[in-house]
Image 1 (tube, rainbow, N blue to C red):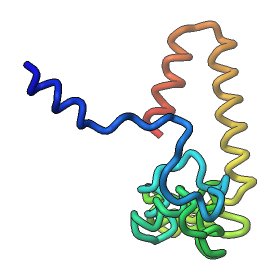
Image 2: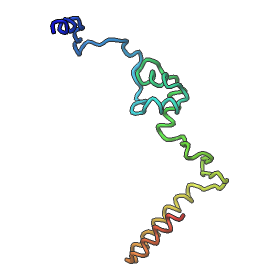
Image 3: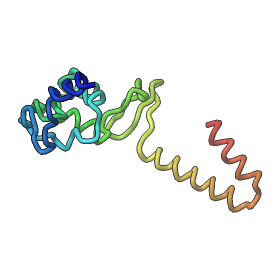
Image 4: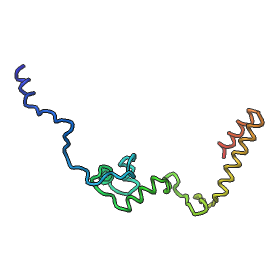
Length: 139
């Protein structure tokens, strides 16, 4: 048993929690990257995963182009992969088939749907409300 105890005596003592090793951050982590995993930063900014991690840790300073790409994605100015084939113009959105839908027409659709929902509920007939939801699912 004494042989086992002597092995523990040679073990290094734990360091106090206040002591920090390693390099201090060279650049403060920009708030722009806060809350996003390195994998997302890597994909959005077209950088390697290790570079994205370096940006998050403050080891590497992101360039202006990387910061702008991150800002555009985080503020949702870039369409995601689900919208592939769609085009956004200044006054309309164009679907993959080439059909343009203006902003005013989209607003009108929303108002028409709200109006139809209101009419279905006013009738008091449960069948009308259910029919409304069936039509929406079919559209």
